[in-house]
Image 1 (tube, helix red, strand yellow):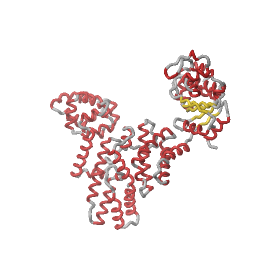
Image 2: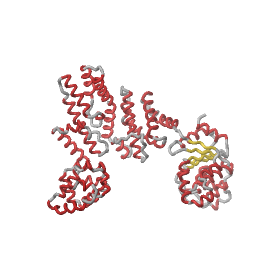
Image 3: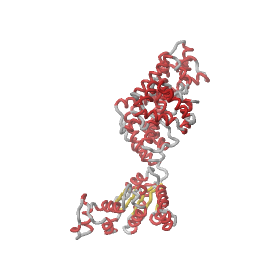
Image 4: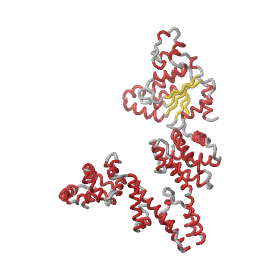
Length: 564
């Protein structure tokens, strides 16, 4: 007999019992209870009371009474015969008679075959004490002789109790001899407790139920999707079924709009890998969106369309959907890159001949769609240089078109890395790629690409500044690199014309604490160099000397810039 059947059997056969279902938030306590309800005898009636935000004991009594017998006018007529004239109706069909009085007049027979379930006990209002709730549970058991189910997270109750004791130390010590409230009333009220520590089977059932709605896919694809989602649930959701429901909603959107359009891709292993990468990224962005703690085992991802979808009320426009499909299609082609890598290794250490090497290059490299969002930059730029050079040695011809596209692709990736101002330096530390920029043609392409990305986001320097809530935020860590997208002349004018900016720059970088930010390698940033040019203006000769004198005693970034 499984857990659901065990609980249902207990409640069907026993009376005057209180069953506790304990477990962390999102573990599936309420889901378990809803499954139990389906297994209860048909003559059982469940009164479900969600205590989330409940303010008073009276509120709970009203909800129980109305759930049992309908609105108060009806209850009064059946319970207080002869007192109808005293009933004073108010809005909503309620009356002025106190709910405690009505509840007390209800007999045991009114609760025959009734099960009252209190959920979210730890999420009640601070105005409603645990003592009142457990007192009501005891009243329902002993006086009304019905079964009661309480659903809660014990650790949260203990934490709340700790706060209570801290605020009322002397009173608590006198009344409860340092024992927490929950423990005291648990001993008096609760007859049986079930703790949920693992909800894997529930999670699998939820996932299976959602994926079974896809009627036009094969069992093989259905199994692939179910297994990947469950794997990601175990790795990224930390047993939180509420998060799983959110994730499934979003996965459903992207499955129907994109992923399932490619489910007939012949290489199912590649399809599975691409799907896994997509789900990892989507779940990561979902957790960020919901402000859920990111665990160490979460693989970070900044895929912009998932982020855009979440910010745009779970919707992508036509162009974004098209890009999403292109991106996923390129991810499916990732096996081409690994074939290239294998070709390089086999040629170097294995028995791959010159002829076979050329054939493998032509079968893989020439088939790659050099689309900006694909995964070709998984390898260093020099990886392709070696392949192309070896190909030329063997065939005596160059793959000029391919080389041109590779160069463009990597330079765009370099600019994107700089433009996002993240902490990864994959391309900025790629020596072979940086050497390419020594070529005038590709240096110009790099500058043009930078300008294109800059203008697509910032119309001018003021747009950059206004994009921050506080100007100082643009001075921290990688954010300051954005100033490199503007010419020094523009920044000099910024110092001249914007007094607030000039003051905040000086105050920020003349403070002792700023030296800990280690700007040593960034003093060539256009912002700092523009400040030097600003001080070197003829109109600022004396100003510069005053500044130098002031910062000479400061262990700061400005001292490093101007003196050291």
